[in-house]
Length: 173
Length: 173
DNA sequence: GGCGGGTATTCCCTCGGTGAATACACTCAG
DNA sequence: CTGAGTGTATTCACCGAGGGAATACCCGCC
Image 1: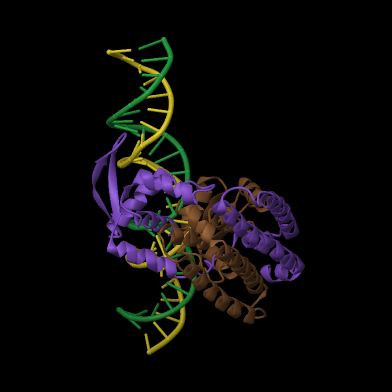
Image 2: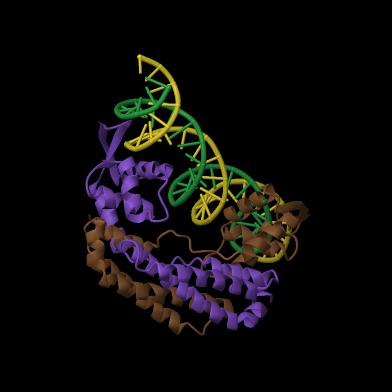
C-alpha cells in the first residue's frame, strides 16, 4: 500500500512521468531500498485503472517519450485519507517471534535462536549508533526508527528467554 | 519466507497432509492470522518442486483423499539453516515513517499524522496491557512483542515530532 | 433422499517485487 | 561517419504472498 500512496504523494506536486517519479521516490524514501521500474509502471497502471491518477498525454524529452500522469480528485482524496488514518500493527507475527515458536515446535534450540539474534542486533546497534549523526535528517530519523525497534526486539528477547520452558511446554502439547 | 518454513517445521514432526498442516499452523501461529487454503497447497507444491518436501502417497480419511507430504533431508537442512540464521530488519521503511515523510513531501500536516498515530497506539497499548495476563503463553509473548514495538514507535514519534521542521526543510528541498 | 456440516483439495485472481529486454537520443573515440 | 557507450524511459515476463471461491467426498440426520 505504501508505494501507490507514495506515487500519489509525488503526483500531488504536479504531473510527471514514471521515470521522474522513480528518481524522486529513490531520493526521498529509497535510502537502502530503491524502487524497481517494473513496480513503478505497474503501480501507475493500477492507479490509472482505479481512477486515482490519469494519463495526460505524452511529452518527448531526452530519450524515449514520456507518458505523463496527473493525480485525480479521487486520488487526492484517497491519499489524504490514507495519510490521516493511523495504521495498526499488521497482526502478522514478526519473523523473530515465528522463528522462536517454530524452533520449539520442531524441537530445536530456541535459546540459540535468541542468542544468535541478540548477537547480530547488538552489532547492528553499534553500527547504527556510530552513524547516528551522519547523513541527512531522513537518514538519521530512519536510523532512530530502526534503533528503537532493535531495542524493542532486544527487550523481548530477554522476556522470551525467561519463558522458554513454559512456551515449549505449551507448543509441544 | 516464514510460511514455507513453518510448514517444514510441522512436517519435521512427521508426514501429514495440507489440511492438518493448516490446522496445526493456525493453532500454533495463527493467533489473529489464519492461513488460507490457497497458500497452504501452493506452498506445499513449491516445497515439493524445490525438493524440500515430497509427496508420499495418498491416504483416505474422513472426506476427500489426503495427499501426504514428508520433509526431505534437504528440507531439514534448509529449515535448520533458516532457523539459526538471524534476520536483519528488512531495510524497508516502516509505514509510519513513510506516512510522515510523504505528509511533508505533499505539504500536509505531519503533526496530525504523528498525533493520530500516537492516539491509536496508546489505545492499543491500554488494550494489550489489560490483556497482558490473559491467554496462553504464545498469546502473552505475542502481546509483549507487540507492546515492545508499540513503545518503540511511540518513542520515535516524540523524536520525529521534535525534528519535523528540519525534516520538512530537507524533504521539500 | 436430500440437506447441512466437516474434511480436503484445487483453481483463479490480484498485488508486491525483481530482472531483463527494448527503444530512443546523445556523445565521443576511432 | 560510424558504432560503442551512457542516460533516459517504458515494457514484458516471471515469482511468491495472499485471498476467495468452487469442487468433491463423506457423514449423520430429518
